[in-house]
Length: 538
Image 1 (cartoon, rainbow, N blue to C red):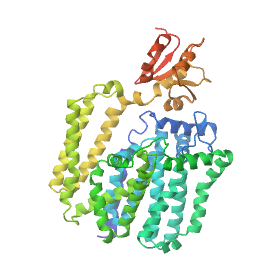
Image 2: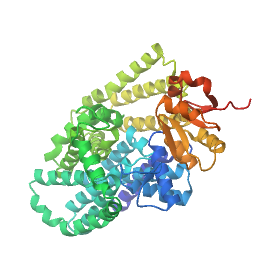
Image 3: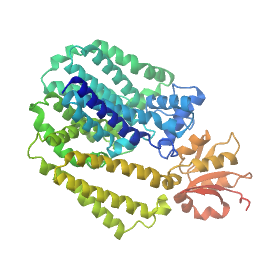
Image 4: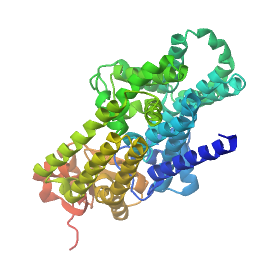
């Protein structure tokens, strides 16, 4: 193949990849209101940066917010300055980070396996359930995943390219600095651990001499250190809170907010990488066997990347499903390489593996459909606003797509088989955004009630919640929140001589039935309501 024809063919792959990402990450990105929990909190924190002009100290509800470093908040704040305080602006940095990580995964896969396998790897990443969801919401994890992936990719490119090794490594150190600004020490600990294990397994510790470590440390500190130094000088308690309590404490302490068993991430990974997780065990086995073949160091690097992050977070005391997002690119690279071998017929005996890997989806999804038909969730509309018919339709569509895909796999039409899975993911997302998300929104967001109460109370007054503040109310009103934590506090508050208002979640409202005679519902939406001590006019 001529170089011109090769470049034209690869440009089609890249164009197709970008088109898939634009649909998955950007379609209707700003049409949905911000949701509780976390989206409203992170957006409100970034909004406070713009309004207050204080970009050093993240704040939420008037308090210092030191749980996360500020990088993603800075990106959202910059987006707010350009596009205004909109949902699109709040989510745009996550979508761009999601797109960037997909393209870096393509670059990495291309270096190891070539353009076709790289394309498959990038598509696998983009269409993995948890990945495209987190690329559409206001969270810090996608920034961490991008910069860790970028740092590791730059290392591996420099490892294989002696001519451009120095600039690639130096850029990689800068990426490590941004990674630490995204999520803290784990942003440098994980890449250093992965690179170190890779060099140890390859018996190449002497390669450290080639890695520009001295200059790299200076670049890393120049990027990461200034904010940490300034915030520590401003608040001496920050170091003990963030580094000791939030990081070391969450890893080693038995008293953490999210304690989970050691096997917690196994089902989370299978669900998060669905529909491609069905191929992950076989892809890992295939990659392990391929260590000594033509893939050589690249496959080993991806395997270590995957295993190091998975084991590291499995050993931690505190666990959340989003923590393992930085291993998704490595898993996608391994699955993409496996699918590429299937397409090319370069690995004999894998046809049955494809069939048996995909078979669980064809068994589980029909059983799930049968279950919801026999035992329908009767309170679904009341609890989440969703019409049961849409769930039936979506489940039936998934079942039909799975059987079609299985038939293609049996006939060994693997190119169409892979395309059918990608098409299923895209159609399910579009269906969900158009038919499922709008009725759910009142149950997950306080946007409309926030606008309502903003007109009812004086501009200087705080919002008052019972038991728990709702993040989105703070974003949409530019107000702070006070929380009444006991029925007695609620009773005393409602006994005021002037008209006062309190925001409830429906479950909490029902729990204080004995106080209903002294309170009146002013407005209600979804599972939230505004209550006053004075009866509203009819």
